[in-house]
Length: 563
Image 1 (cartoon, helix red, strand yellow):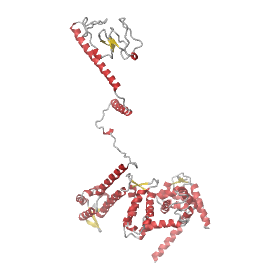
Image 2 (image 1 turned 135 degrees about the vertical axis):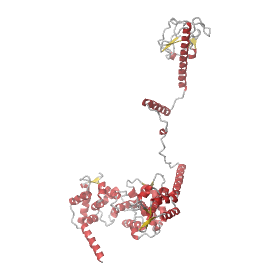
Image 3 (image 1 turned 60 degrees about the horizontal axis):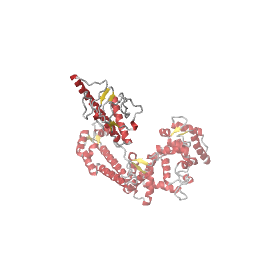
Image 4 (image 1 turned 30 degrees about the horizontal axis):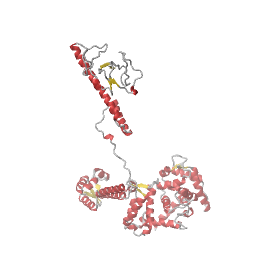
């Protein structure tokens, strides 16, 4: 039998009684005829087309490449007793040179047989191997793509493979039914906050720090204020202990340096700086204990719990009855959310709470000697909270705990226009057309703090009747007509809208000469005046007679000085 593959010829000798069994699905439709005239056996199509049969033989199963042997010399018998059959055109080589060539050809044919065996074994193993999953195929595809891409690019893979492992940056919050995970999260956060709390300076360590600063002060003093230079500053830092190390840096020293001819800083200013930092960290830890989600913000219920538990520690609130605690907490919390949550998301960042002055005002109530004037201007004081709640009760004539539009119209001096009140009940949250205490608090905070951006945003939303994000001449005229009608009712001569419109645009100086945006009102610093002109008759009258009022105030001041 002769097999020619890639111009290589292999001679195979088998016994005459061997018979090749070929499955029907592998039989070739157009078999190559046997040159010897014997009927040709049809072989699987995986064999070469010019595969020819030299002798009749029988073979069961697949062809074993190990049966491929080099040709024997002419006349020599095979190991099985069969005779060698010469193939026309292929004589056995003679001589020593021919023997060398024969051995070389035999070695080549042996290597070819081994290659055939390796390929067949690979195909059989591939057929028996289990099918890979889609994920395994994708991983293999990506691995091969990376390999071939790097080879094509000409680069070499880096020894550092850390880029393949992306650090975990998202941790799913436990679900409500995952009680164990929630408890584990709460306990771990509590341990973490306790460790952070132990890193802060306590009262004894603060007193020791003050003693060291006073001992290392640098003369001369400026008045009664003790000073310290940088050299002694570093000495105190070495003696104060590891907790104080973060405060004794060149950056902090330079920050507190203010044109001293000797390059010194005030000991009192530095100590106040340390106290302020310690207080901020303590407050941050205290607020974080109420952060149920552990995401760095407080919800309304979280802040309510914080203030409720803070009340017993504030001496200025000792006179409050416990039945009023819920109304006081609501009053205090609304200021935080009105100014720090303008988008009404229902949560406030703890950083924003620490950055604003509201917490300072609240904790100012720890001072037992706080003046009456300070209490009246402090929104969180007991007199202020009682004043706001008392106004709400006085407006509620039917005593149903809610305010209607008619009841709210008597707010303040009772000069708010009906058009503005209509807009309030259209835009604000109401219950069956009536306002609750929480919505009333937003209304009061907006009208009492009209210079603040959050208050201007509240009023601007009411004035923007077309929801276009700006006020045009139509919007201004719509609201000012109500002012003109009230002026007629009170027997005053109405003012021309054209004059008022020109004055408003002159005060605001908007980027677009035909419309006023919220940012224009904030940038002009005249937002409180403009809103008062449009919604409150008393506000417009105050603006219209501002020159007379200023002259009257000056006269009163002069009379007091003469007295």
